[in-house]
Length: 297
Image (cartoon, rainbow, N blue to C red; front, side, top):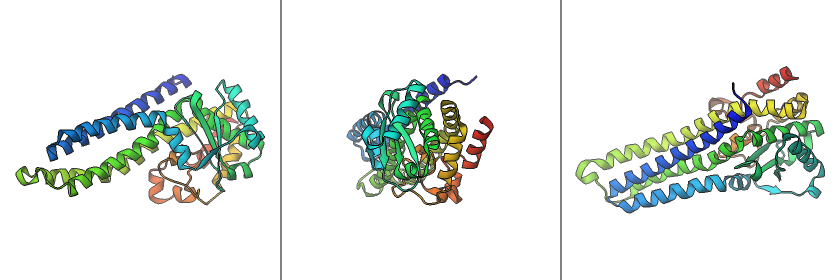
């Protein structure tokens, strides 16, 4: 039977698996380029990049996510109500008090990030604070606290960096192959093969990133909703908050695909729930989430 602790362990394993796959891909690209150009130094550089980026994704991914969304850290005096709600829920959940951030965005949304509960943060938009009452805000913060307690934040934050670097590596691989000058193409046709591989990587990398984020995100949202409802013992608060959030049709001004999977609601608004975006949606339909909360209420 699945428990909170098995879910936490699963997220830690997912993180190490993602980092291992990333290392293998980057080193493999380095080997391919070193073979193509006959320069072993390229392989050494690739290994160095893989190690450094893996370390960055673990230790600095939260700061990168917060920076990408222009989140500004606050103290208690800046918003006493938000601070008190978060502090009370942290005590109830038996978790350390996370750092709090506010994003200057009219669209209502929020996300949690960090490598562990001791180094966690919750960011909310100014729009969220404007439209929610206290019980609804408690529901949202409880949802984000659940992501912290479930260790969702580790795999979510690491994915931001690794998926971005994966796409960058694919692009660099193609550019090296096309504009790299001399290679083995004149001797054994290796250049043509490498060019095809580069094109395939460039196409597949973004799609793979979307699939990874979608697979990671959908199930965890239902779990965080359920855990948040248990934390506040008032599912209707979160249900009402989700209804208000989903009724906002516009997207966030700083919405980006790198961190979209981290938010409580798709930052691209109604656009993110249609067409191609719906196929790789990082969030389950809001109606299903609200219905699940009603059942628990």
